[in-house]
Length: 577
Picture 1 (cartoon, helix red, strand yellow):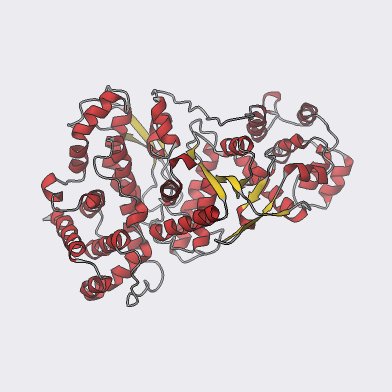
Picture 2 (cartoon, rainbow, N blue to C red; picture 1 turned 135 degrees about the vertical axis):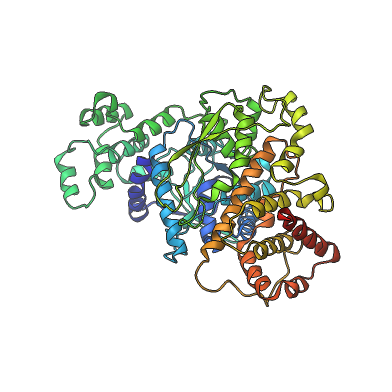
């Protein structure tokens, strides 16, 4: 699939410049949305901070605005997200992107490109925020997480619901979707009007005299195969005028001489220099298989081929509704976890190291205490070195149901008895400590306490803790209050602050995963309700210079909220006393 993406990007440029069939289009009714690609585009478009880890509260409000504009224009969106790469078909792509993203993060912290679309890096928890917000606004029936790559599911839904696809994935230029493809980069939206440009593969085929539009599915096989011999003299003439090996117009001209897909496939095989067992590019296999198995009605799911554990159907159903974390499904299905690159200080320790004790317990619950999970760790101080480390799974002493199938009735009965005790123990909290804190803050408190105890001394964590707590209370209690006195963080990014915020988010996600496994004994708290790094940074400046008293008064908090703030600060700070 990596070959497809690197190849079809060239095709996308060609289509956008050469296709004469673009139509202005105002969608109505059902619309299938490629969730992950829209997540990236909306985050870039929103203009929120991506250098310090993410303005998740602001980002969530921007997603809400987008969805509400669709609804106001009688559009009924259905969001589909990628799942996991259970068969590791994209391993080479992931390895390459891991290093590229680490370099991109390092550039961000050096102030090299942070606003252009190409350099804009999606923060660690942005995808989770997107899923949370979609469910919050539309309900879980409008969201689906594919078991693997989402393209086939997206295309299937579009065909079954007779509607177009909204994405920025150029693969959809060659999928046989009758109602067409809407590139998000060509869409304008507001409460009054949503207008896009519509691409239909049938019109594209007709423009280039391709009699059978399904032949477009062959384009990845040709453009992605570097071992093809020259096609014919006419195409060679076009190639001489182009800088690329197989210019799209040459390939389209070649494909247009065939009527049947099998005929074209045989011709490609005959001019390939590859071994007979490997003469059709992997990209072609992926798309050709999708075409052959394309459902005529209803929806479909891709079965996860896990190697060592049985996954109950209801666990898969939870995963497909975004309710079972990707990290845990990776651990179950692959025995390997590849943490997404966070915006952190690459010259220091790996930000995900801090939450390792939490993950070890989660791995023990899903796989048993005698197992281990492979993790790609960033070597301390290195940007491009990610050795695989075997992480030993552990089992908490309270855990007495290791042999019960994951999330079955017996598991659930036992987990409900000891889940809260396990979570409070790992975060070094007790029932007595959290007694005076409102229940909706329990999860936030557990994350902050674990962070406060374990974070390094590279930042004034007392001041930063106050800023994080104030930001959380503002987002949960007083979202509409403005703070004209608070000034933005001056100068270039502070690497120590960036790293501390990355560690806080990593702990949040690890504890979120364990909380899910233990049936949410701590009331779950949406990350978009508590984390907005712009506010945190502004509050950090004020607290550092004034102690925070002026800021607290300006926020207009009621007596109860002020007491929540004081209680959280006091109880977290007691961790080291």
